[in-house]
Length: 165
Image (cartoon, rainbow, N blue to C red; front, top):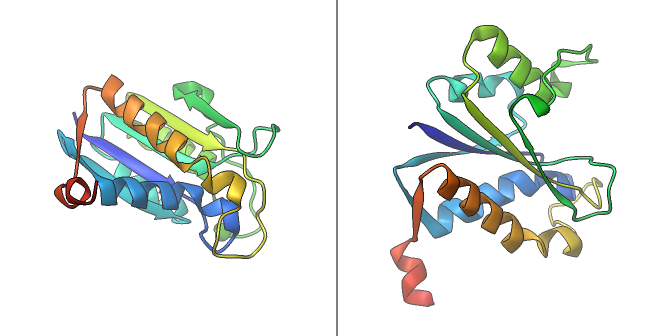
């Protein structure tokens, strides 16, 4: 079962970069069996489509406006993840909903698709996430590992992590 873990977001806008920070942390700390393709999707937009091809499972991490308090973590699956094509001011505004719509249109949307999102506190310019969001990183990583385990993917700490523990 081909699986991808995709982190989305702009690391120049504080909490907007949580998806990218999360996948980087997971890639640094864990090895997966069977292998999981870990992708820093940043702000790639439609350039993410090749990563959807041939996948059975895709787990996406992103900052999401759930309309809840900052730090709220939500999980959205399958057809509950919006997949719409809407008018944009520029190609830089292409988001996840557009990518999923295009993947459906092209027939490459995987059978299992899950989004783990976190309500950001700040989208202001800055490289550091707010304390509220960075404080949720372990919970976010735990949800990632739980999802992958549900998909029959096991993980192990990388050897350099074992030495430092």
